[in-house]
Image (cartoon, rainbow, N blue to C red; front, side, top):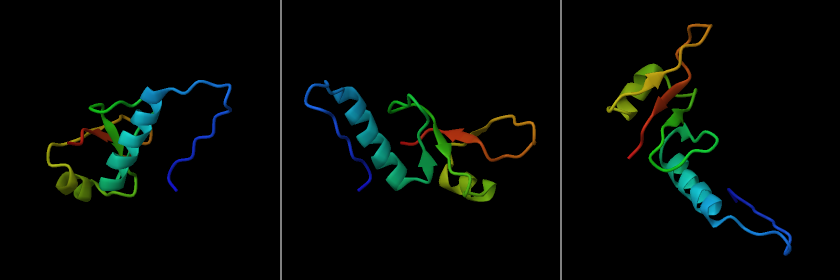
Length: 82
């Protein structure tokens, strides 16, 4: 089980959010990425820190952007997935 939503009968549902979560689950199951808060299909995703820079270059030939971090480490990387 990847997702469980439990709403009381008296609370309305946000169908757009459910669809967004399902899209995120599909993308994250196919690629080693995570979707940030408020992510929508077509927005950039975060490449998993467990993926080395060399692996990221092979996995995402379209390239990626690295966030400038005080540590200078290259582990917060953003890319688009098809």
